[in-house]
Image (cartoon, rainbow, N blue to C red; front, side):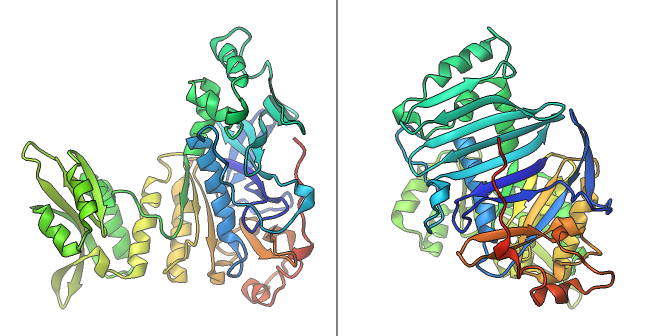
Length: 447
Protein backbone atom coordinates (compact mmCIF):
# COMPACT_ATOMS: atom_id res chain seq x y z
CA UNK A 1 0.00 0.00 0.00
CA UNK A 2 1.16 3.53 -0.71
CA UNK A 3 1.73 5.55 2.46
CA UNK A 4 3.35 8.74 1.18
CA UNK A 5 4.73 10.21 -2.03
CA UNK A 6 6.90 13.32 -2.50
CA UNK A 7 7.83 14.77 -5.90
CA UNK A 8 9.64 17.91 -7.01
CA UNK A 9 10.71 19.55 -10.27
CA UNK A 10 8.47 17.62 -12.65
CA UNK A 11 6.34 19.39 -15.31
CA UNK A 12 4.15 21.92 -13.43
CA UNK A 13 5.45 20.77 -10.04
CA UNK A 14 8.36 22.90 -8.86
CA UNK A 15 9.18 22.82 -5.15
CA UNK A 16 8.38 19.53 -3.39
CA UNK A 17 4.75 18.56 -2.91
CA UNK A 18 3.83 15.79 -0.50
CA UNK A 19 0.84 13.46 -0.77
CA UNK A 20 -0.15 11.07 2.02
CA UNK A 21 -2.49 8.10 2.37
CA UNK A 22 -2.12 8.23 6.16
CA UNK A 23 -5.22 9.67 7.85
CA UNK A 24 -5.10 13.13 9.37
CA UNK A 25 -4.14 12.84 13.03
CA UNK A 26 -7.15 14.78 14.24
CA UNK A 27 -9.66 12.83 12.12
CA UNK A 28 -12.29 10.84 14.02
CA UNK A 29 -13.76 9.41 10.80
CA UNK A 30 -13.18 5.64 10.82
CA UNK A 31 -14.54 4.98 7.31
CA UNK A 32 -12.54 3.75 4.31
CA UNK A 33 -9.29 2.99 6.10
CA UNK A 34 -7.41 -0.23 6.76
CA UNK A 35 -5.24 -1.16 9.73
CA UNK A 36 -1.81 -2.58 8.94
CA UNK A 37 0.76 -4.00 11.35
CA UNK A 38 4.23 -2.46 11.24
CA UNK A 39 7.35 -2.75 13.41
CA UNK A 40 6.31 0.60 14.92
CA UNK A 41 2.81 -0.62 15.79
CA UNK A 42 -0.56 -0.53 14.04
CA UNK A 43 -1.05 2.13 11.37
CA UNK A 44 -4.24 3.21 9.62
CA UNK A 45 -4.01 3.65 5.85
CA UNK A 46 -6.58 5.24 3.54
CA UNK A 47 -7.87 3.27 0.58
CA UNK A 48 -9.08 6.20 -1.57
CA UNK A 49 -7.96 9.75 -2.32
CA UNK A 50 -9.06 12.30 -4.91
CA UNK A 51 -7.47 15.42 -6.40
CA UNK A 52 -9.61 18.41 -7.35
CA UNK A 53 -8.54 21.61 -9.02
CA UNK A 54 -9.17 23.82 -12.05
CA UNK A 55 -7.95 23.03 -15.56
CA UNK A 56 -4.18 23.37 -15.83
CA UNK A 57 -3.65 23.15 -12.07
CA UNK A 58 -1.33 20.14 -12.28
CA UNK A 59 -3.61 17.19 -11.52
CA UNK A 60 -2.37 15.25 -14.55
CA UNK A 61 1.23 16.29 -13.87
CA UNK A 62 1.01 14.59 -10.50
CA UNK A 63 -0.22 11.30 -12.02
CA UNK A 64 2.36 11.60 -14.81
CA UNK A 65 5.13 11.99 -12.23
CA UNK A 66 4.15 8.64 -10.69
CA UNK A 67 4.04 7.11 -14.16
CA UNK A 68 7.52 8.44 -15.00
CA UNK A 69 9.01 7.16 -11.73
CA UNK A 70 7.33 3.77 -12.09
CA UNK A 71 8.61 3.28 -15.65
CA UNK A 72 12.11 4.46 -14.69
CA UNK A 73 12.22 1.93 -11.86
CA UNK A 74 10.59 -1.01 -13.65
CA UNK A 75 12.00 -0.71 -17.17
CA UNK A 76 15.51 0.53 -16.47
CA UNK A 77 17.56 2.72 -18.82
CA UNK A 78 20.08 2.01 -21.57
CA UNK A 79 23.67 2.99 -20.82
CA UNK A 80 24.80 6.38 -22.07
CA UNK A 81 21.28 7.78 -22.57
CA UNK A 82 19.73 10.78 -20.84
CA UNK A 83 17.08 10.36 -18.16
CA UNK A 84 14.23 11.90 -20.16
CA UNK A 85 12.78 13.67 -17.13
CA UNK A 86 10.39 16.52 -17.98
CA UNK A 87 11.34 19.22 -15.48
CA UNK A 88 9.66 22.44 -14.37
CA UNK A 89 10.45 25.11 -16.97
CA UNK A 90 10.90 27.93 -14.50
CA UNK A 91 14.30 28.52 -12.95
CA UNK A 92 14.30 27.28 -9.32
CA UNK A 93 17.83 27.80 -8.09
CA UNK A 94 17.48 26.03 -4.74
CA UNK A 95 16.50 22.72 -6.43
CA UNK A 96 19.89 22.54 -8.13
CA UNK A 97 18.42 21.21 -11.36
CA UNK A 98 17.36 17.97 -9.65
CA UNK A 99 14.00 16.21 -9.79
CA UNK A 100 13.17 13.97 -6.83
CA UNK A 101 10.72 11.06 -6.52
CA UNK A 102 10.22 9.54 -3.07
CA UNK A 103 7.82 6.71 -2.09
CA UNK A 104 6.97 5.30 1.32
CA UNK A 105 5.00 2.07 1.09
CA UNK A 106 3.85 -1.04 2.95
CA UNK A 107 4.93 -4.40 1.57
CA UNK A 108 4.89 -7.85 3.18
CA UNK A 109 4.29 -6.40 6.66
CA UNK A 110 7.25 -4.02 6.33
CA UNK A 111 7.45 -0.26 5.68
CA UNK A 112 9.97 0.87 3.08
CA UNK A 113 11.03 4.19 1.63
CA UNK A 114 12.61 4.33 -1.80
CA UNK A 115 13.61 7.45 -3.69
CA UNK A 116 15.97 8.96 -6.21
CA UNK A 117 17.04 12.35 -7.54
CA UNK A 118 18.19 12.99 -11.10
CA UNK A 119 18.75 15.67 -13.67
CA UNK A 120 18.55 15.44 -17.46
CA UNK A 121 21.79 13.44 -17.63
CA UNK A 122 22.16 11.16 -14.62
CA UNK A 123 20.98 9.91 -11.23
CA UNK A 124 22.55 11.91 -8.37
CA UNK A 125 21.00 10.31 -5.29
CA UNK A 126 19.21 7.06 -4.54
CA UNK A 127 18.21 5.38 -1.30
CA UNK A 128 16.29 2.39 0.05
CA UNK A 129 15.24 2.40 3.69
CA UNK A 130 13.26 0.11 5.98
CA UNK A 131 11.30 1.02 9.09
CA UNK A 132 12.65 -0.22 12.38
CA UNK A 133 10.75 0.22 15.64
CA UNK A 134 11.56 3.90 15.88
CA UNK A 135 12.86 5.16 12.52
CA UNK A 136 13.74 4.41 8.93
CA UNK A 137 17.08 2.64 8.62
CA UNK A 138 19.09 2.65 5.36
CA UNK A 139 19.53 -0.54 3.32
CA UNK A 140 21.61 1.26 0.72
CA UNK A 141 22.40 4.86 -0.14
CA UNK A 142 23.91 6.37 -3.27
CA UNK A 143 25.37 9.86 -3.63
CA UNK A 144 27.23 11.59 -6.47
CA UNK A 145 29.53 14.35 -5.27
CA UNK A 146 30.27 17.68 -6.99
CA UNK A 147 33.21 16.08 -8.83
CA UNK A 148 30.94 13.45 -10.37
CA UNK A 149 32.15 10.57 -8.22
CA UNK A 150 29.40 8.11 -7.25
CA UNK A 151 29.53 6.32 -3.90
CA UNK A 152 27.14 3.51 -2.93
CA UNK A 153 27.00 2.25 0.66
CA UNK A 154 25.33 -1.11 1.24
CA UNK A 155 24.33 -1.63 4.86
CA UNK A 156 24.54 -4.87 6.82
CA UNK A 157 20.72 -4.94 7.03
CA UNK A 158 20.46 -5.32 3.23
CA UNK A 159 21.75 -8.91 3.16
CA UNK A 160 23.82 -11.25 5.33
CA UNK A 161 27.59 -10.93 5.14
CA UNK A 162 29.14 -13.31 2.60
CA UNK A 163 25.69 -14.26 1.25
CA UNK A 164 25.28 -14.52 -2.52
CA UNK A 165 23.06 -11.41 -2.66
CA UNK A 166 25.49 -9.35 -0.58
CA UNK A 167 28.53 -10.35 -2.64
CA UNK A 168 26.70 -9.70 -5.92
CA UNK A 169 25.43 -6.30 -4.68
CA UNK A 170 29.01 -5.27 -3.82
CA UNK A 171 30.13 -6.22 -7.34
CA UNK A 172 27.25 -4.35 -8.95
CA UNK A 173 27.86 -1.13 -7.04
CA UNK A 174 31.26 -0.87 -8.68
CA UNK A 175 29.70 -1.28 -12.13
CA UNK A 176 28.05 2.19 -12.07
CA UNK A 177 30.53 3.71 -14.48
CA UNK A 178 30.29 7.01 -16.33
CA UNK A 179 28.07 5.59 -19.09
CA UNK A 180 25.75 3.93 -16.53
CA UNK A 181 25.11 6.86 -14.22
CA UNK A 182 21.65 7.26 -15.71
CA UNK A 183 20.75 3.83 -14.30
CA UNK A 184 19.18 3.08 -10.93
CA UNK A 185 21.11 0.81 -8.60
CA UNK A 186 17.80 -0.79 -7.57
CA UNK A 187 17.15 -1.84 -11.17
CA UNK A 188 20.63 -3.33 -11.49
CA UNK A 189 20.01 -5.37 -8.33
CA UNK A 190 16.64 -6.51 -9.63
CA UNK A 191 17.98 -7.31 -13.10
CA UNK A 192 20.56 -9.57 -11.50
CA UNK A 193 18.05 -11.53 -9.45
CA UNK A 194 18.66 -10.13 -5.97
CA UNK A 195 15.64 -11.11 -3.90
CA UNK A 196 15.11 -7.96 -1.87
CA UNK A 197 15.20 -5.84 -5.04
CA UNK A 198 12.74 -8.18 -6.77
CA UNK A 199 10.17 -7.55 -4.06
CA UNK A 200 10.59 -3.76 -4.17
CA UNK A 201 10.44 -3.56 -7.97
CA UNK A 202 7.46 -5.92 -7.88
CA UNK A 203 5.59 -3.38 -5.73
CA UNK A 204 6.16 -0.71 -8.39
CA UNK A 205 5.05 -3.11 -11.12
CA UNK A 206 1.70 -3.39 -9.35
CA UNK A 207 1.02 0.34 -9.73
CA UNK A 208 -1.75 0.61 -12.33
CA UNK A 209 -1.80 4.05 -13.96
CA UNK A 210 -4.79 4.89 -16.14
CA UNK A 211 -5.12 8.02 -18.28
CA UNK A 212 -8.20 8.98 -20.33
CA UNK A 213 -6.50 7.46 -23.40
CA UNK A 214 -5.60 4.19 -21.63
CA UNK A 215 -7.61 1.20 -22.82
CA UNK A 216 -7.87 -2.21 -21.20
CA UNK A 217 -5.48 -4.36 -23.16
CA UNK A 218 -7.18 -6.98 -25.36
CA UNK A 219 -10.48 -6.55 -23.48
CA UNK A 220 -12.60 -8.44 -26.08
CA UNK A 221 -10.24 -11.41 -25.87
CA UNK A 222 -10.27 -11.32 -22.06
CA UNK A 223 -14.05 -11.11 -22.02
CA UNK A 224 -14.31 -14.01 -24.46
CA UNK A 225 -12.23 -16.29 -22.23
CA UNK A 226 -13.55 -15.11 -18.82
CA UNK A 227 -17.26 -15.68 -18.38
CA UNK A 228 -17.20 -14.11 -14.92
CA UNK A 229 -15.78 -10.84 -16.26
CA UNK A 230 -18.22 -10.89 -19.18
CA UNK A 231 -21.23 -11.32 -16.91
CA UNK A 232 -19.97 -8.74 -14.42
CA UNK A 233 -19.49 -6.00 -17.03
CA UNK A 234 -22.90 -6.73 -18.54
CA UNK A 235 -24.63 -6.64 -15.16
CA UNK A 236 -22.91 -3.41 -14.14
CA UNK A 237 -23.72 -1.64 -17.43
CA UNK A 238 -27.35 -2.67 -16.95
CA UNK A 239 -27.32 -1.53 -13.32
CA UNK A 240 -25.93 1.86 -14.36
CA UNK A 241 -28.79 2.46 -16.80
CA UNK A 242 -26.55 2.71 -19.87
CA UNK A 243 -29.17 0.95 -21.99
CA UNK A 244 -26.96 -2.12 -22.31
CA UNK A 245 -28.68 -5.28 -21.03
CA UNK A 246 -25.73 -7.62 -21.56
CA UNK A 247 -22.54 -7.99 -23.56
CA UNK A 248 -21.26 -10.79 -25.72
CA UNK A 249 -18.26 -11.51 -27.91
CA UNK A 250 -18.56 -12.25 -31.62
CA UNK A 251 -15.71 -13.92 -33.46
CA UNK A 252 -15.55 -15.01 -37.06
CA UNK A 253 -13.04 -15.93 -39.70
CA UNK A 254 -12.30 -13.15 -42.16
CA UNK A 255 -10.13 -12.30 -45.12
CA UNK A 256 -7.67 -9.85 -43.62
CA UNK A 257 -6.85 -8.23 -46.97
CA UNK A 258 -10.51 -7.31 -47.50
CA UNK A 259 -10.61 -5.73 -44.02
CA UNK A 260 -7.37 -3.89 -44.64
CA UNK A 261 -8.84 -2.44 -47.80
CA UNK A 262 -12.00 -1.35 -45.97
CA UNK A 263 -9.91 0.30 -43.24
CA UNK A 264 -7.71 1.89 -45.92
CA UNK A 265 -4.56 0.71 -44.15
CA UNK A 266 -1.19 1.81 -45.56
CA UNK A 267 0.66 -0.96 -47.41
CA UNK A 268 3.62 -0.89 -45.01
CA UNK A 269 1.30 -1.66 -42.08
CA UNK A 270 -0.37 -4.50 -44.00
CA UNK A 271 3.04 -5.94 -44.90
CA UNK A 272 4.18 -5.73 -41.29
CA UNK A 273 1.05 -7.47 -40.02
CA UNK A 274 1.36 -10.22 -42.63
CA UNK A 275 4.71 -11.18 -41.12
CA UNK A 276 2.98 -12.05 -37.85
CA UNK A 277 2.69 -15.81 -37.61
CA UNK A 278 1.02 -15.89 -34.20
CA UNK A 279 -0.35 -12.98 -32.26
CA UNK A 280 -3.03 -10.37 -31.71
CA UNK A 281 -3.36 -7.02 -33.47
CA UNK A 282 -5.69 -4.16 -32.53
CA UNK A 283 -6.86 -2.03 -35.44
CA UNK A 284 -9.46 0.70 -35.03
CA UNK A 285 -10.78 -0.97 -31.88
CA UNK A 286 -11.11 -4.37 -33.53
CA UNK A 287 -8.96 -7.34 -32.53
CA UNK A 288 -7.49 -9.71 -35.07
CA UNK A 289 -6.02 -13.05 -34.01
CA UNK A 290 -3.46 -14.51 -36.40
CA UNK A 291 -2.19 -18.07 -36.57
CA UNK A 292 -4.80 -19.49 -34.22
CA UNK A 293 -4.66 -22.89 -35.91
CA UNK A 294 -2.87 -24.83 -38.64
CA UNK A 295 -4.77 -23.10 -41.42
CA UNK A 296 -3.41 -19.74 -40.22
CA UNK A 297 -6.83 -18.20 -40.24
CA UNK A 298 -7.46 -14.60 -39.30
CA UNK A 299 -10.17 -14.29 -36.65
CA UNK A 300 -11.95 -11.01 -35.94
CA UNK A 301 -13.02 -10.62 -32.30
CA UNK A 302 -15.48 -7.87 -31.32
CA UNK A 303 -17.51 -6.90 -28.27
CA UNK A 304 -21.24 -6.71 -28.88
CA UNK A 305 -23.64 -4.71 -26.72
CA UNK A 306 -27.25 -5.84 -26.45
CA UNK A 307 -29.99 -3.19 -26.17
CA UNK A 308 -33.73 -3.66 -25.90
CA UNK A 309 -35.42 -1.38 -28.46
CA UNK A 310 -39.20 -1.61 -28.82
CA UNK A 311 -39.10 -4.99 -27.14
CA UNK A 312 -36.53 -6.30 -29.60
CA UNK A 313 -32.90 -7.22 -28.87
CA UNK A 314 -30.52 -5.13 -30.99
CA UNK A 315 -26.71 -5.46 -31.01
CA UNK A 316 -24.30 -2.50 -31.22
CA UNK A 317 -20.55 -2.39 -31.78
CA UNK A 318 -18.34 -0.54 -29.29
CA UNK A 319 -17.84 2.48 -31.56
CA UNK A 320 -21.63 2.93 -31.62
CA UNK A 321 -21.83 3.19 -27.83
CA UNK A 322 -21.71 6.49 -25.95
CA UNK A 323 -18.43 7.96 -24.70
CA UNK A 324 -19.64 7.26 -21.16
CA UNK A 325 -20.22 3.57 -21.83
CA UNK A 326 -16.82 3.28 -23.50
CA UNK A 327 -15.21 4.99 -20.48
CA UNK A 328 -16.91 2.51 -18.13
CA UNK A 329 -15.30 -0.33 -20.07
CA UNK A 330 -11.90 1.11 -19.06
CA UNK A 331 -12.85 1.18 -15.38
CA UNK A 332 -15.15 -1.77 -14.66
CA UNK A 333 -12.37 -4.41 -14.95
CA UNK A 334 -10.75 -2.63 -11.97
CA UNK A 335 -13.82 -3.23 -9.80
CA UNK A 336 -13.95 -6.86 -10.98
CA UNK A 337 -10.44 -7.51 -9.64
CA UNK A 338 -10.65 -5.41 -6.44
CA UNK A 339 -10.06 -7.58 -3.41
CA UNK A 340 -8.43 -10.28 -5.54
CA UNK A 341 -5.04 -8.55 -5.84
CA UNK A 342 -2.98 -5.83 -4.16
CA UNK A 343 -2.80 -3.29 -6.99
CA UNK A 344 -2.81 0.45 -6.47
CA UNK A 345 -4.72 2.38 -9.13
CA UNK A 346 -3.91 5.94 -10.21
CA UNK A 347 -6.71 7.19 -12.46
CA UNK A 348 -6.51 10.53 -14.23
CA UNK A 349 -9.91 12.14 -14.87
CA UNK A 350 -12.02 9.34 -13.47
CA UNK A 351 -15.09 11.43 -14.23
CA UNK A 352 -14.32 11.81 -17.96
CA UNK A 353 -17.62 11.45 -19.89
CA UNK A 354 -19.45 10.25 -16.75
CA UNK A 355 -22.37 11.69 -14.81
CA UNK A 356 -21.63 12.58 -11.17
CA UNK A 357 -23.77 9.69 -9.95
CA UNK A 358 -21.82 7.19 -12.05
CA UNK A 359 -18.46 8.51 -10.83
CA UNK A 360 -19.64 8.36 -7.23
CA UNK A 361 -21.06 4.87 -7.76
CA UNK A 362 -17.70 3.60 -9.06
CA UNK A 363 -15.83 5.06 -6.09
CA UNK A 364 -18.35 3.66 -3.60
CA UNK A 365 -18.17 0.23 -5.25
CA UNK A 366 -14.38 0.33 -4.96
CA UNK A 367 -14.59 1.14 -1.23
CA UNK A 368 -17.09 -1.68 -0.67
CA UNK A 369 -15.16 -4.19 -2.79
CA UNK A 370 -11.76 -3.79 -1.14
CA UNK A 371 -12.71 -5.79 1.96
CA UNK A 372 -9.56 -7.08 3.62
CA UNK A 373 -7.46 -6.49 0.48
CA UNK A 374 -4.67 -3.94 0.06
CA UNK A 375 -6.08 -2.15 -2.97
CA UNK A 376 -6.03 1.65 -3.17
CA UNK A 377 -7.40 4.14 -5.69
CA UNK A 378 -6.00 7.65 -6.21
CA UNK A 379 -7.86 9.71 -8.80
CA UNK A 380 -8.18 13.17 -10.28
CA UNK A 381 -11.50 14.75 -11.21
CA UNK A 382 -12.99 17.96 -12.54
CA UNK A 383 -16.47 17.24 -11.18
CA UNK A 384 -16.64 19.28 -7.98
CA UNK A 385 -19.98 17.67 -7.14
CA UNK A 386 -17.93 14.73 -5.89
CA UNK A 387 -16.65 16.86 -2.99
CA UNK A 388 -19.22 15.38 -0.67
CA UNK A 389 -18.37 14.61 2.94
CA UNK A 390 -21.23 12.12 3.16
CA UNK A 391 -19.36 9.93 0.67
CA UNK A 392 -15.75 10.88 1.45
CA UNK A 393 -13.63 11.46 4.50
CA UNK A 394 -12.26 14.98 4.60
CA UNK A 395 -8.67 13.65 4.47
CA UNK A 396 -9.45 11.70 1.28
CA UNK A 397 -9.85 14.98 -0.64
CA UNK A 398 -6.90 17.07 -1.88
CA UNK A 399 -6.91 20.48 -3.56
CA UNK A 400 -4.37 21.47 -6.17
CA UNK A 401 -3.81 24.88 -7.76
CA UNK A 402 -0.96 26.88 -9.26
CA UNK A 403 0.64 29.59 -7.18
CA UNK A 404 1.93 32.95 -8.43
CA UNK A 405 5.18 31.33 -9.59
CA UNK A 406 3.25 28.88 -11.80
CA UNK A 407 4.05 25.92 -9.54
CA UNK A 408 1.41 23.34 -8.66
CA UNK A 409 0.69 23.48 -4.91
CA UNK A 410 -1.10 20.70 -3.06
CA UNK A 411 -3.07 20.80 0.17
CA UNK A 412 -5.36 18.30 1.91
CA UNK A 413 -8.96 19.25 2.65
CA UNK A 414 -8.31 18.14 6.26
CA UNK A 415 -6.16 21.27 6.74
CA UNK A 416 -9.34 23.35 6.66
CA UNK A 417 -12.04 23.59 9.28
CA UNK A 418 -15.53 22.76 8.07
CA UNK A 419 -18.44 23.95 10.14
CA UNK A 420 -21.26 21.53 10.80
CA UNK A 421 -23.84 21.83 8.04
CA UNK A 422 -21.53 23.91 5.83
CA UNK A 423 -22.09 23.51 2.07
CA UNK A 424 -18.62 22.28 1.05
CA UNK A 425 -19.32 22.56 -2.70
CA UNK A 426 -20.43 26.18 -2.39
CA UNK A 427 -17.42 26.95 -0.17
CA UNK A 428 -15.01 25.34 -2.67
CA UNK A 429 -16.46 27.22 -5.65
CA UNK A 430 -16.14 30.50 -3.73
CA UNK A 431 -12.41 29.82 -3.21
CA UNK A 432 -12.67 29.06 0.50
CA UNK A 433 -10.35 26.04 0.31
CA UNK A 434 -7.83 27.08 -2.36
CA UNK A 435 -7.17 30.79 -2.00
CA UNK A 436 -4.22 30.24 0.37
CA UNK A 437 -2.49 27.49 -1.60
CA UNK A 438 0.12 29.89 -2.95
CA UNK A 439 1.35 30.32 0.63
CA UNK A 440 1.57 26.58 1.22
CA UNK A 441 4.98 24.93 0.87
CA UNK A 442 6.12 21.48 1.93
CA UNK A 443 9.81 20.97 2.54
CA UNK A 444 11.58 17.77 1.53
CA UNK A 445 11.67 15.36 4.51
CA UNK A 446 15.16 14.44 5.64
CA UNK A 447 16.35 11.00 4.65
